[in-house]
Amino acid sequence: MSKDFIDRLIHNMKLADMVSKAAPWMVEGINDTQKNVRYVGVKVKDDWLDIFPEGNNLLLKFVIDRASAYIEFYLANKPPFLRITTKRFGDQEKWETLLGEFKRKMKKDKTDYLNHKDGVGNLYALVKPHLK
Image (cartoon, rainbow, N blue to C red):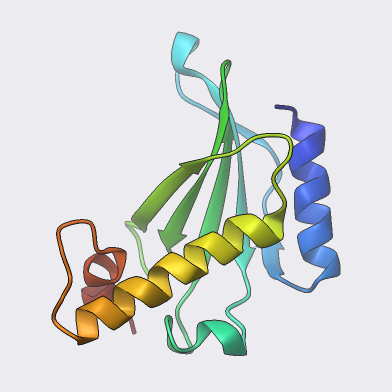
């Protein structure tokens, strides 16, 4: 996985007007645990409002370490940010798939939560107390 691939992914998200703000590449960690990271704020549009009410912030953290790449989804309303989930991805992934799978999972978990069928791995139950 390369920075160029993730930069192209973020560029395509910008073209679709999905990015509110994107930070430059940074290095996090010490010595052998150093990772290249890039933070991207996602615009919460109308199709997200049934999951995240207006005024909530969704943040993506792209991480490249020596062996792999993954993306972390955060609810970024106030520090400390709440990490919702982490997903590994490869060179064949598209941003539409990454965000689409996350949105589908959140919608399903919200439905289960509202129907009192939520279980231990329910992401919406984790996020609900922190929503605005």
